[in-house]
Amino acid sequence: MALAGHDTGMKPASNPLAGPALMVLTMALYVANDSLVKWLGAHMPLGAIISLRGLFIIAILLGLIMVMPGHGPHSLVWTFRRPVLVRSLWDTAVTFLYLFALLHMPIANVLAIMNLSPLVILLLAAWRLGERLSGVDILAVVIGMTGGLLVVHPGTQGFDLWALSAFAAMIGVAGRDVVTRTIPEGAPSLVIALSNVLLIQLGGFALWAMQAGDLAQNTQSAALFTMQTWIMLFAAAVFLSAAYVLIVIAVRLAPLARTAPWRYTIVLWGVLAGWLVFGEWPDALAMTGIVLIVIGAWLAGRHVFHAHRPQRGHTR
Figure 1 (cartoon, rainbow, N blue to C red):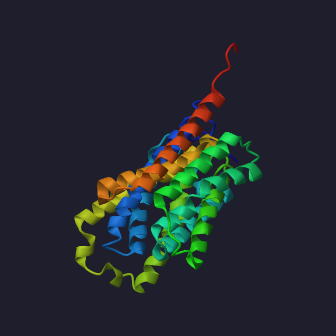
Figure 2 (cartoon, one colour):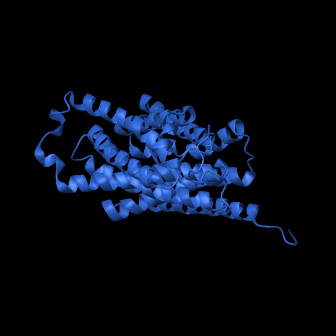
């Protein structure tokens, strides 16, 4: 039985650019979280970061579910519904496959592999969901993928068995988004996000335990959890909470072919974060890639706008 009265973001948006716009914002939130995690990673174990950040995320999402109109405790039943759990399993697998690859491979190589995901998303959307693809859709993704490769310009070293983990994560991203499109409209996006983080949280505790053997010893010292550390963990939780919810809404608002090209904006946000936070600036090859990503995004946006623009002479 569907639960009525929940957020209406599951239905197609009247504004054709709403889905792509949310996708761009989501990519910015992911980069903001990743920047904080990169800094925290130099001071504490990855398992601890995932676990402690996850506790904040659970508190944030539960608080929103309790106070948002049309939600409340009764909406939590969706946490255990099959399509929501399937999506959460996909995303949990993606999270850890990506992290395992990132710990053993150059980041540029991992990003190069992950840049294939929009193309796989298009193919799966056509195959599993019956979405119609145009030549412009495919061209926009190919241009964005080429630009992404130029930005990260991966080397030949680092492609080994761990690359299979990155490839699996990339396919998992596509699978997750296809599953998201099959979730009933009545399922609140906040609850879908909560189900997702609950499973990742279990994995985070397991990773923390494996890294230290003893959770008590893994704290290392009282200095590990300074006020600055807690503030950054909370900020990362806020960014990731918003990203978890918005990625669900974006994928449910528009066909995957319309949102996939905009995933490459994560590279632009990454470059901006690298410059502002870490003092890194892209070289000429990377700048060429950035231009291509912008062209691909513009092409995708122009195609969406014209595809939904009323024809001249059309009357109701």
